[in-house]
Structures are given as structure tokens and as C-alpha cells.
Length: 170
Image (tube, rainbow, N blue to C red; front, side):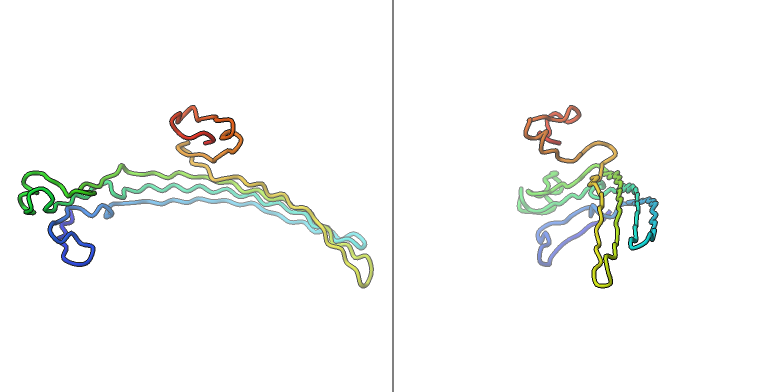
């Protein structure tokens, strides 16, 4: 438990605070894997290159920020700190700050493919061209609490069946 009696700038000059809210345990675990390969072939005046890259990562964060709670007592009700405390009168704004433990469980996949050619047309001219495919695959929250925004679903006013009070398009 943390007891703070403040007298400096930003402190609760006429009161005290129990608990800091941020002194609790948190764990962060990130796992990733990646596979990639490139191939180069020289055939006459051409140098062909092909490649692929696939990666996936997961990140699990479990934190308890604000879970222990933070209680502030000041002189809002009676004008006396001890009287407000004994009467159970907490500070006016943000007198009690507390939150449930929070978990952030994310995953993301990356895919990239390419093909290119370097074609030597003559001693003074070389042509380079190629094609790359790298789709955007957004991060996903594994527990399904939040998902990506879809403009088409928003325009059609389609709402989530899991979170019906959420905005359209999610």
C-alpha cells in the first residue's frame, strides 16, 4: 500500500492518497517465426530472381495497471482531511480509480512474394522490372474484442453480432 501526502506542484495539497495503482505485476510474452527464401537464375542476358517471405507473431500482455485501486481523500466535503476520511468522503474528481486486470492477446501474419528480371539489352542498356505481392493482413485481437474496420460494412450499416451496441463496420 502506498500512502502519499503531497505538497508539491500537482499534488493533492490538502489531502492524501492510498495506493498508486501501477505497482502491480505485469507479464509480456512475444513469439515469432519467419520463413523466407530467394532464388536467382541467370539465363543468357536475363537474371531472374524469385522470393517469398512468410512471418507470424503473437503477443500476449497481461497487466494489472490500476487493478489495486487508488483512493484519494481531500477536504471536498467537510474542509478537514481527517473528517472526510472518517466519513468515507473521497476526493471530488477521480477519488477512486480502479480497473479490472487487462489482457491484450494479438496475432499478425505477414506474406510477401516477388519476381523480377534484370535484362541486359546491350552494353549500355539494362532493363529492370518486377512484381511484388504483399497483402495487408491486419493485427487481430485473438479474443475478438476489437476487430478491423470495414468501410463496406460501415456503408451498409452492418453491426457486429457479438457486440451489437458497437458502431457499424467493426
